[in-house]
Length: 142
Image: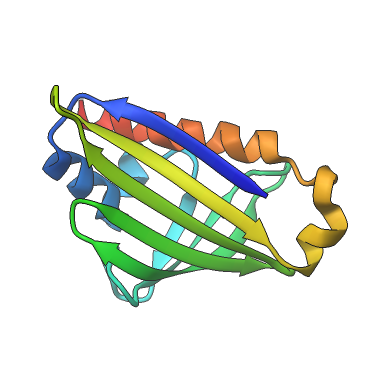
């Protein structure tokens, strides 16, 4: 299953990048990924790990995240596993010719549990939460 969402933000890519990669600032602006705890890293960087929760279901779901790629001002990729579901989440910052930046979220879900759950997995809810996360980021930096 794939979930792609994008938003245009009227702010310099540097401001967007700083807000998005500063894990400690998430508590102020991020209403989607909650209960952030890190293993020492305060910013998203390759090799960094953090734990957080999200409400895909009526209850919070906790999961561990490993950051596998960071290209400054361009891309962050992290992966997580939860009950046999493997997620790969990529955030891409694309500066726009007219100013500002487009942030695109691309999340891919796979694994044994996904093969079994298939159509029962709430893709619409993941899309809704991802859009809320991007809107939170937009509001924080504009």
